[in-house]
Amino acid sequence: MKNNKQTVPNLDSLRTEGDINLGKNRRLWSETQQEPSTKQMLAEDERWFIHQAMSTPCLNVLRAASGSWIEDQAGHRYLDFHGNNVHQVGFGHPRVIEAIKAQLDTLSFCTRRYTNEPAIQLAKKLASSAPGDLRRVLFAPGGTAAIGMALKLARAATGRFKTISMWDSFHGASLDAISIGGEAAFRQNAGPLLPGCEHVPPPDASHCPFRCGGTCNLACADYVEYVLEREGDVAAVVAETVRNVPVIPPPDYWRRIRAACDKHGALLILDEIPIGLGRTGKFFAFEHFNVVPDIVVLGKGLGGGVFPLAGILARDGLNVAAERSLGHYTHEKNPVACAAGLAALEVIEQEGLVSRAAKLGQQAVVDLQRRLAGLKFFRSARGLGLLLGVEVCGTNGNGNEEAERIMYAALRRGLNFKVSKGNVLTFAPPLNVLEADLSRAWEILEESFVAVAESKD
Image 1 (spheres, rainbow, N blue to C red):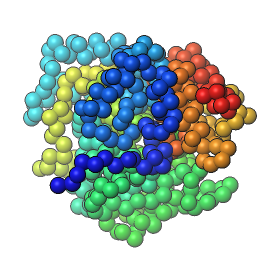
Image 2: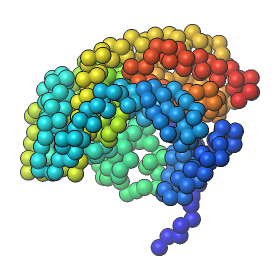
Image 3: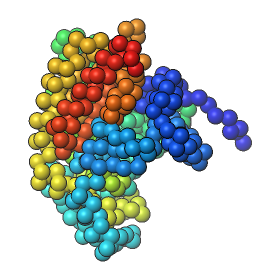
Image 4: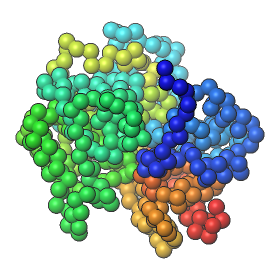
């Protein structure tokens, strides 16, 4: 039996892959911002939960969440532009809560092999919202499980098992999901992983290994076709339509890959777990690129910011696995979760949140450029709808240290967000965020850049 000696996570991999939960900036935050009762609860959390990178130690203790705001144990309030991408309609939307309470009074659980009206209505709503022939739905209790269902369906439909996915991608934390995923913090020392999982470079202009220069020649897309051709028996290309950083592919990227999949008999599976349901200014992010995948994976916000709920939408012609159990999860058709999801979709539709996200997102990029241009450590701002990123540069280095300091400076002023890829400040506000709150968030961000530049934080 192995000893229980703990290993220290690789800080460089954490800075590249996600939030930073170790180091001097976290310690300084804890010492100056957290009261004794909070520190005690965090110590209890560390005592009872298995430690893991990115969530041990936890950042803080929450006691309330509403709309665009979260409140910690000490009563400090923060605009939450992180939210794990679950709060398209904000936290605790009244219509979602009302639907949950009503469903609890009638049918709180649906035993497996049975169905129920909320599940049927949610599946019908999703299918009717999708372009092309994406008409078949299957639910799961989380995005990682939905990715697993998509992989199993691709194997059943093609008779093949190999996949092509992207380095730097994230599709969930289970063994099958990290096999196709490309983040070191999840893959390292976890092998052996699933066989047949090929990886290619992502369409990330800032880190493009092909060095296309001023004119993109879509060499990254051609690389995918090259592997499809050489392998010859790939079941599916699995990728995030838009990386959650965000990394926005060139306009023709997905059309090129769609054509390559069709040519070589592979399915196209697009993971929109964190970015679907209107966040990018289209209900499905792939609609920006004029393609339709064979399978799209949804999650996070599908549960209305309350329940864990995910699912896949597949082409009607992929209804070919009736003799297999692709999911059959205990909470696959949970009526309360489905009632929450149905209410969330109705809010998105009736409040016009998709078009609102497109409009506010365009304004946000302009506002961020205007506010931050000329400030020390600012490199660029980009976005697609209300999926936004600000890239940070460093005085000596890649900007990772400066990005972390800016994040904590913003937290002190009441703004919560995520650092991705080490030096990109990533923002995902609710689609119904008040314009005044959006403006206040950018004011806080500007103040934080200035404070770090002047070494005040």
